[in-house]
Image (cartoon, rainbow, N blue to C red; front, top):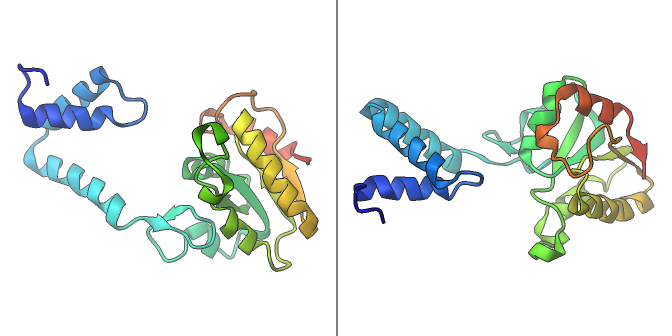
Length: 200
């Protein structure tokens, strides 16, 4: 611990630096910003952190995060329930929704198959996905995992499970650069990739 920094501040810096993509310098800047807040602002910030832990849960249908019994997309009567777009994480749902073009539903895997990292299909929401496909509602499943080795392996694994069920399985077209994350794709690129999807 740095001797010139008060212990509570050092603890806050250490907690911020545990966040993905945040280094010591960024964590220090955020900690000092918190310190400069008045007590009311600091309490609102702390309450917001606690609220995401106590009020947010997974939608039992698509596995996206929600504060309702069923998320707004799954409960909407305006969504096409015959199409499911499979994504890696909840941020990807937000990215697709920004395009304003996709009218189907989603399924969030909460990760990708990665043997190197010890992540298997059992640790993802594959069982929940297969449960959704057991009736005749779904006609197409779009694989929208990122075009990385793990994303491709996951898409291939899932397509081998789904195709024997008589459901069309498509993959996003590569308007998306190989190795890129969906999170950073702009709306136009993502829309073109969605439009140019191919069967796998």
